[in-house]
Picture 1 (tube, rainbow, N blue to C red):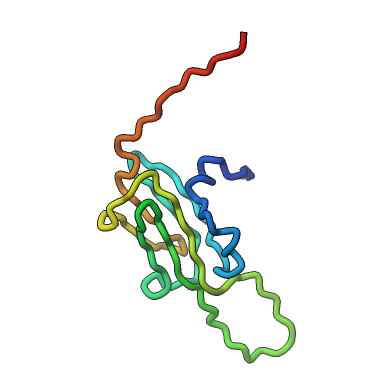
Picture 2: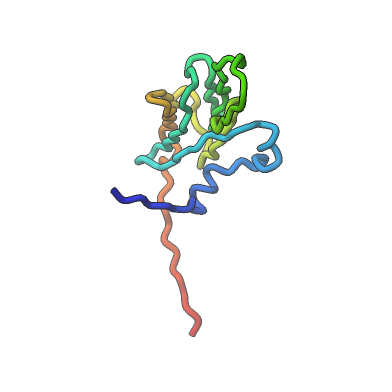
Length: 140
């Protein structure tokens, strides 16, 4: 088994950047981990959201050029236990914003939840966007 540790690329940082995230991080609570990638002309976002009820606790919206996933992870444990408790699982409200390359049709967006992973597909946001090769010159 091979384990690869990578840093997020600048390309991914552009998609996943929320201009207010640093200022609001403490107020909004935890931010779910996400993988965002291009699949043909579609943008696919996969968010780790274990322990949530997708019908009641997750909202997926398209706001212009933003895909916004928000919701709440609720703590279902009783507080009757005595003694110390160590908890590394975060509970509370969350929000994750993905910047889209262009405005998307909200009616065409698909979202599914399976085994703790929310997969959101935004079709066609890369349609008509062809990379343009730029010539690199060197100093003589």
